[in-house]
Length: 446
Image (cartoon, rainbow, N blue to C red; front, side, top):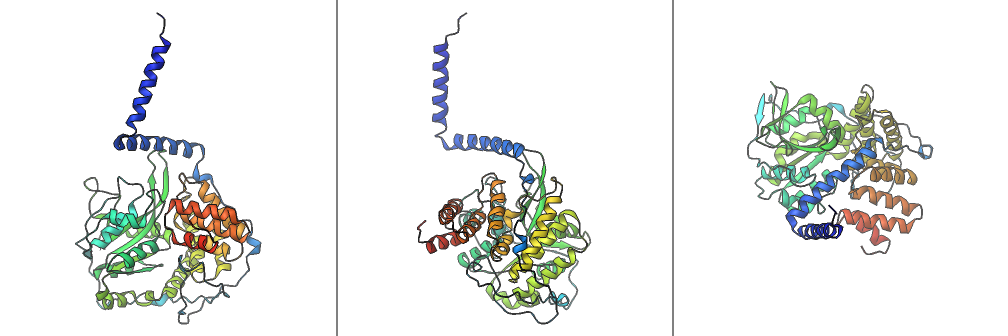
């Protein structure tokens, strides 16, 4: 029997045409695109494992050597460094680091209850949209205070591009202050005792932590950042009670437990930062609870002392994170020289970690090394670190890394390359203010 090749060709052509027509239907297109996306990611991560990408600082000898001195005098009142004002902040001589470990917060005059669970949080899950834990968790936190929106309302502001890899805590604060009638306090260096004190006084706390999860496609356990809203605790069980957007009922309990020990280990990946939302009329209730943490400089000094202590005894990944936190706190205290040296040590330790436990996503969430290297004139290290971060990511929707690479290129005289990077940053995060401002300074409209 002879094969009618022309008939077969016509049939295949018809099937191809029908397939292309079907792709015009949103439901079909989204499903097919999702499947192909999963296959593509699997192929990339199989042949180019992101945990194998290692940044090696090359300009460490250019970093000024400073002596780190710790004293116990009152903390300074200088304006803290934030991702929104660091670009224009002048670099001055390193300040004295002034931790005060005995005044981490004002203790409650009466013993705390052994168990507390706050009611009134409307649950939101993150599923169905890519990496939507930040909008979902912030929507939950806001709902406690009577806010009536949902994760989509938050997401349109925080993630104008769905595939943006991360929402920074300061972006959440911007949303709260600009889009709601509520206020917020964001600080590093939190403790178990402070979390319990806030919750016992009816203030839920939002934290960001690093968790190991099994990747769907590769089957590997990998570290990633994740937000969780703490709404209670139980001393008898030694755990916090969380509303976690990833662990959705009915498969998981609404009151999802996280042990005190687990909180510390996971929270370390984000410098023990905590975010408290409050109604302005409750300021007089909240501020005494925070005590010295009201002073942002003090909070970073306190967190620095904690990091210095942790590098003295931790091992492996925890030691890497402690050194990273040490650099982070020094950045926010304007001690860029010591910060750069701390990050050099952190990245050295990272390269020594086994590939199975390397938190390769960390630079999606933590941008402080860019500050340290940039403000010590180590522009090539900024470019190399940003390039390593970008190249190791599937879909490099990392507007911060593109921005900092552009900043370093400007410093090295590569104006055209910088403009391209800034435009890419805006492609991945439309309206990203630092990139818009940098383009304006270059005389370029986005």
